Each structure stands twice: as structure tokens, then as C-alpha cells.
Image (cartoon, rainbow, N blue to C red; front, side):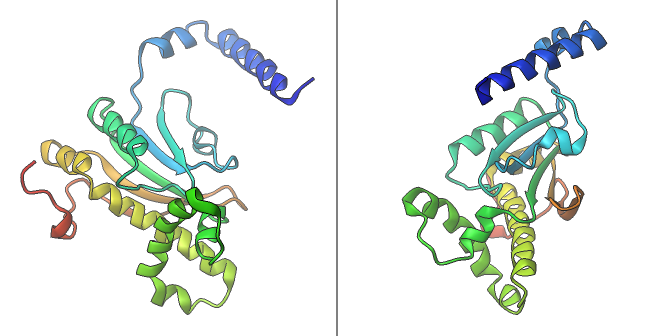
Length: 211
């Protein structure tokens, strides 16, 4: 049996179990989606949003990319954010990184990872540059990488607040709140590292005055 065929068999078993437990389970999911959360996480296969938060399908709207980045030119991310905020009316947007992130570690080096990855990782290098003074005094490389993961999450939350999508939502209502979390691969625990309540003011340079 090919490895992908096992996935299909597991899917059938999972679907059958769900129907046995609740015959209307899929019928309800097919007709409504009302998640409270948008999760912006890392593509790392060890950090599945639903599983580590104990949530069910339909409860979290998910976007994942390398190192959980919020890049202002990423149309994919921005379209997900727009849909989640303006159509699904999520109450919380969570940026969740994880310790041991390969993307963050790669960005901290001077290695050439070829054009596409280089462009993506440069956004993380910018985070390092902003916090170079703090990071350079950390001698333990693992601790330095962990701190860069935390700082990267913080900066991505700030990047969310810089978008007109979030600022317009804040102006028109009281949501969503923004959260920065880091997941521990070694213990499975999520650590909150940053929070920005709806309506928080940021550097005026990034605040739109005509929304």
C-alpha cells in the first residue's frame, strides 16, 4: 500500500466514526461555518492548529505559511484575513509560532537558500535587525533562536495591526483582538507572548486616518 492510500483509508474510518457518534455531524458542518478564531500558524507538520487546541472542524479558520508570517504584500494571507474578519466576523486573530522553527533558524544564518526562500526569510531577518541588540547578547544559540521566535510572533501581530483590514474592523466595532502565541514542541504547551486588544493605537505612521 502506498503511503497516500493510508491517508484515504484513515479518512474513511474517521468519517465513519463521526457519523456513528453523531449522524448529523457533517450535515451541520456543510451548512454553517462560524469560527471565533483565525489562526495564522507555521506550515510545520508538528503544529496542527485543531489538534493542539482541542478544537473541532468549524471552530478555527486557518492560514499557515513558513514561520507564521504576516507580510503586507502576501495576497494569500490578506485575502484570508479579509474573509475571516469581514465575513466570518472572528473575534480573535492568533499568530502562533513554535520553538525550534526551521524558518526562523534559517533566517538567522547567512546561508543562501535560493531566490524564493531568500525573499521569504528576509522578512524574518528584518525582525532580527530590529531586535539585534537584545539578541546578540544571548550566547546560547538555542535560547537565541527561541527568543527570535517570540519576537517574530510579536512583530507579526504588529503587522496585523498595520493593515487597513484590522484598523477598519476596529473602527467599526470592538473586534478582533490580536494574540501572539508560541507552541512548545518539547512539552506541547502554548505560551502567550503578546496581546493587542481591539482599538489599540500603534505608531501613527501606520494608522489610516480616512477609513
